[in-house]
Length: 150
Image (cartoon, rainbow, N blue to C red):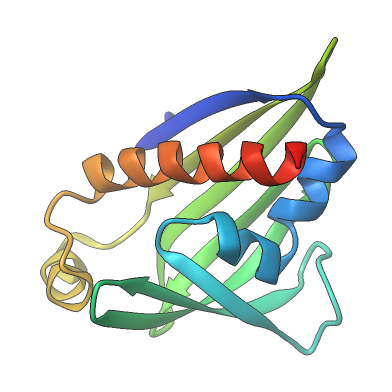
């Protein structure tokens, strides 16, 4: 299935370094546009099946989510996001080695039920989630590149 938003960037850093950044709740929170951090729930770190509580911010709006890691390797880190028990999205970071480091592709799929969309518009202030996520991904990847290459 085609993602609702996706972009990639070339990073002059080893794939392992990028994986460490995207799989760290604190580090990813420092790079991401809306996600601001989280806490592992019953796990000490990233692994397939690990759950975490995320906190997202947009202006004065703040909303929590619960996610479960579905992929956790140097080549891919991905998680499914739920809000109030409902599947709302999937986020995925694909990390491919290149001659000068790696290419990172960030993608997301909107999984919200149609009836839930108006509620999330009120909660987040985002009317067009695909357009907003595209801009967020591009900003996140630029920060990720800067952090990985530092």
